[in-house]
Length: 356
Figure 1 (cartoon, helix red, strand yellow):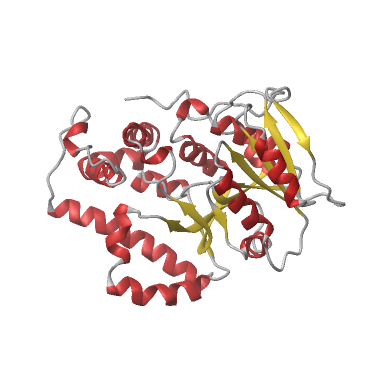
Figure 2 (figure 1 turned 30 degrees about the vertical axis):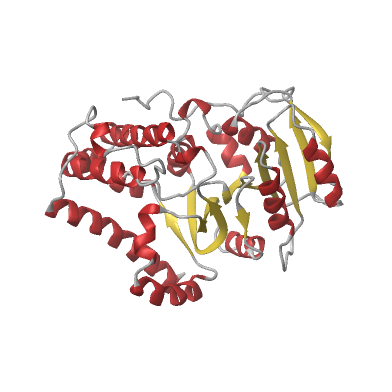
C-alpha cells in the first residue's frame, strides 16, 4: 500500500512551470477586474462543455464581476474555439494547452490564470445552479478568513449507495423541508472529521468549489502523482491550514457515469487510496491511531462496499481486496459504526440548519 508522507502535497504553483504550456486564444472583455473566476477544464466533451458554460453564464442577481476561463487539454482539438466565439460573451477567456497536461495539472494552471480573488472549479460535464454566484457571494461575506467553500450538489445519474435511501418514504417526506431550510446556510468542515471517519466529506471539487486563490497557491496545488484521489488529499492538507465550509443548499449538479470514476481500475485505486489515508492518520494523529485500532475492519468493509457499488460492470467482488485484509462479515459493531457515521453527519447538518 502506498505511503503518503512524501506525496501528500507536491508544490507546483511556486514557479513558472506552466508559462510555456498553454496558449491564450482569446481573452475576456470585462471592463473591471473580476472578483470570481470560474475555471472549466475540458477534454473532448463539447456537448457537455457548452451546457456547463451556459450554466455559468445564466446566473441571476449577480452583483460582482466574474470571468469564465476554459482550458482545452487536447492540443489537437481546435473546434471548441468556434463554438466559444459564437457565444460572444465578454466573460469568457479561452486557452489551448500545447500538450496534454492531464486534469490535475490543468487545474493548477487555471488557478494561476485566474484574475479573481476567488477561484471556482467547474468540470466540463457538471453544472451550476442559476443562484450559485448569488449564494456563494452571500456566504463569503458572512465569515472572515474563509479558505474554501465546498458545494453540496444534486447527483445526475444513478448513485448506487444512495439510491435506496432516496427511494424511502421518510427521505421523500423530509427532503422538501430540508431544501427550504438549507437556503443561505453552511457548516464548517474540520480535519478532525477526516481523522474520525476517513471519508471524503468534501465531495468533488468539480462542481462549484470555490477557493481563495492565494491560499490555494500557498498549499501547492493538486499532485498528479496522487490520481485519482489527489483532490481529497489536497483538501486534507488545505484544511490543516485554512477554514473550509460546505453549503447545505445544493448549488450545483454533478454528473455520474461518463467519467473515469466508474472504471474498475479507478475504483481499485480509490479503495487503496482511502486505506492509505487511514494509515496516514494512524501514523500522525493520536485519535487517528485510536480509530484505526477500534474500527479498522469496519472501515475497510464500508470502503469496499461503497466503491464496489460504483462498478457498472458488476465484475468486482469484496474478496478481490483480501490481499489487504480479510473481508469482514456483517456484525452488530459494523451496524453501529455505519449508523454512527450517518448520525454524526445528520446532526452536523441539522445544527447548521438551525443556527446557520
